[in-house]
Length: 264
Image (cartoon, rainbow, N blue to C red; front, side):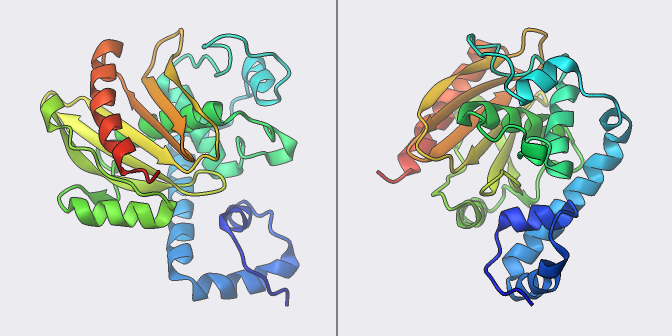
């Protein structure tokens, strides 16, 4: 039996049926001995099954040639809207996110996107998470926002970041809660907020190497807007369907609180 320390990548490989048969028994032993990882594997499997069920008919459609070119990096990216697929609708973002969760589509399956830029991956996943969860009134969060200290501690422990749930009451938004998401090499955290009119925004956060960037992305064809930052080994994207100026105001309030919590 192969004995080694396993990682999140191995969890995804096991769920995708890509783990070598000789590793499977030792992996199951490791999983049983690590309750947090076992719980994460269970959540990933449940999310994968739900996404596959909801998006089954769409996932069977052929991948557009334009998207394939972006994924394989055959085309140069020279403008703000050229480095991200120009999704025709918010549903397309959910498909991309679901494919990443369900089949490793954006995680490098078959050698694709092995050199993806950090900002591309951040915004793609943040918009996908918003469309998949923030817009899902029935399954928006895993942990409610009534106990903010517990929520912050839970997400911080699992992402390896010092995270806070920004207080956005001054902007008219109440915290609904958060959830943990697969994010490639490390888990990502998602916080969801809602105003009195029912509009929802999300804050997607993940450890992201030493990349440094910031900006705003809105697809030419519409859909949610993402305002993002990469700095101090930290990636954050605030996503919503508010007017861009209004979202920028909310994002500024949130970012000030978020960055103050990041050490150094």
